[in-house]
Amino acid sequence: MSHDVKKNKFLKKIIGAIGYKLFDKNSIKTERIVDQISYNAGDFLKILIKKKKIKKIIQVGANDGQSDDFLSKSFTQDLQAILIEPIEDAFNNLKKNYKIFPKVQCLNIAVDIKSDKKNIYSVNPKYYSYYKDKYQQKSVDWLTVLSSFSREHLKKHGVQEKHIIAKSIECKTFNQIINTYNYHDLDLLIVDTEGYDYTLVNDFIETVKIKPMIIFEWIHCNEKEIKKLLLKLKSNNYNFFKTGRDLICMQNNYLF
Image (cartoon, rainbow, N blue to C red):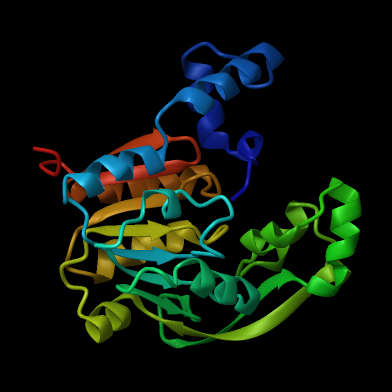
């Protein structure tokens, strides 16, 4: 996940409309403090899982199941889930981290609007030592979080061009996955795909009949995309609220 808030024009307009200066250091520090102690998506899921309102989950972009991941902190033995991660190293760690959960299926594929093969870009592990020195960290396995269908997405986040590798990955549509694994009673869809979130959520609404709760990372959407998507969600009986970098979308009658 990215912290590239400053580049989001839509957010700038919202903040400007309520009288805050986006680049005011005091406001940014205050926002961080509020975010640290506020409910996040994981806290919200814990409540719904405890109340048995969430039983089946599909997570697109599951990574290793730990790095910057709110779902793992909320997971229980009773949950059924399909966790999808296209990057092999992250996928192998994902399987290890969820091996104690018998109702979880991990898929080493990508999700797209059509069934095909497509290049996905990531940081070549042989250059991890460079980023360990750069960020002064013992482990930079979290770099897999930046993996994207867009090479430019990695470059925007400080990855050097020569450190980026491409891999052809099998892609499946939402309908193919739902039909194959009989997830027609899906309760929750989570999408975290580093810049492809708008495309996938929009496609899900347009092509899938069921209307589960949807959580996606809004921060990479531009103004035009987020306006279009929010209007589409509204027209499909969704309301939503923001928690940090994630937007939680629910049918109007979900909580009642």
